Length: 162
Length: 334
Image (spheres, each protein chain N blue to C red):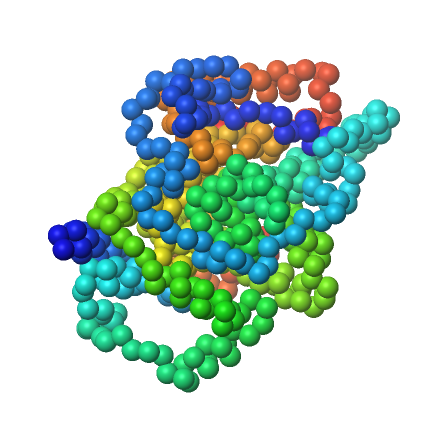
């Protein structure tokens, strides 16, 4: 009893830490934060929540949803039934101990604290590369949706590459 | 210019084998003893191994293992890329004569053998695996320690990660040359994948191979974009990029594995950032094995390293006996 309670408590800590994880700048099919929050909320015994913070009950996918998933993944890289079953099997039987969850917390806080980025500082040589000093700035501006690109600068990039 | 000559240099950065207790340093083949012993974290491999969470590979019994072909050809069907090949003396002399007469830009010519052949081989070998052959040391890190599935597309993701790290360094070269190096690396990647799809994956249809190639192309673009974003912003973003691409977005990810890969990436980029353009462009770089921890250079060691590089290349440039094919205009001071 006490050990399972300890696992739940540390899982709660991990969920709290994951809640502070920065959001993706651009939407992706899956977000790390949401997937991991829902994974560890279950371990912590907390009700699962949707993206607005309201609790939802786990519901099974409807027949239409399953059909649409199967139709969307045609072709050589699509998942077949067997593979889906394998993924389901490997996910469901996760065994956590207090120690392993604390390890996860430690690893996650290392990532969130930018430990490696600060330790192995590469400096402006790579952040403002000599061959293309505005490369990363343009990338970030594009992600943040800043409109500082007009037709001429765009054509310049197309023609000369920078 | 043979490729062997390029590949036989050592990394000018302090490396410590994490499993041994004594510190070792390669500083242009002179030994310098470590001063910053206080660094705490272990090598990426040990970090990944220390996890208490026994996660399994996503798909242990995959149906598409990479088959080894009857005759192993390391890169292509070209004898010039074999490690044993030596150019006949008269061909070498003729080549040097052509370079001297037409004043060929060797920095441009060198992009093919260095980026297209040598650097591509480095990236390719990191995660290379065959169905019934033992894994190499680096491949063990990816498939056994990080529990990645042993498939062809996983191999591609590992290769793409390493290529991206080289792209980051290539952008810091003069634009004209850096762009050329990137182009050669990408060209080679896809021609090699095409070859391997037919020979090893036994894809018989050109149409299906084309589909795969298109898919790999968009994967590479997406991965490079995501890693770039993570590199320039912060570690959490880099970790999510690694999670989406290298780990295929699996739900039961071990955070220690993520941490280990993020550390691995940053340590490689650190080594790349300490190399001058001349060293990098002539193929003086190797990826640090995951079992080895990269120690940071102290400012004093960095000075020493710079001075040594400058002395080496100054002597080479002044030497009248240096062959035209070995000359370069790229900077060795940065």
